[in-house]
Image 1 (cartoon, helix red, strand yellow):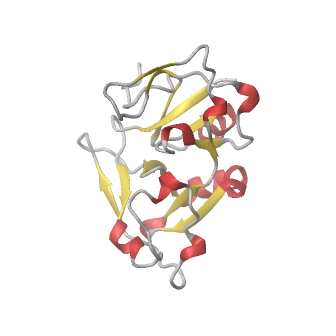
Image 2: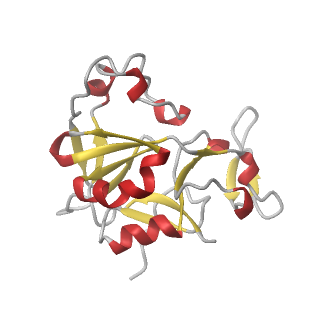
Length: 194
């Protein structure tokens, strides 16, 4: 099974960030790294959720808005993307409305170190007390979660990994904004080859 690391397509599209201050006013005790802890937001709402503002960011001139964007270990989705992907994702996380027709998907599915194929993966520790940084990351298929998208708990839930089903659904619906990298250890997006 082919697995992919998700990145924002900063080469062709804008990416989106959410106004964290607006979120914090609505969620009790919300900290910046909330998504890294895999905690539900809907369980901690102060009142009814009000759509939070978003900001578009672009690395290139004349980039269009994306259907999907990675932000703070969450996915930001257009209405079209939410409708298309909800059947796949709803059981594994929660959606919160954002302004301008977007939605935050807080993925609550995480995989621990049991998914790492230790014989084929390679990690490096650059200095004492640092986290091990993957130089080559290979996953053991039989230990993967059932969800089409998950965060690696062994890397503090800081990014997304998906399988063919998620990628195929995005492609089938013509959704834009993400790059799929088969090199799971790749920290930064790479420009796709033409």
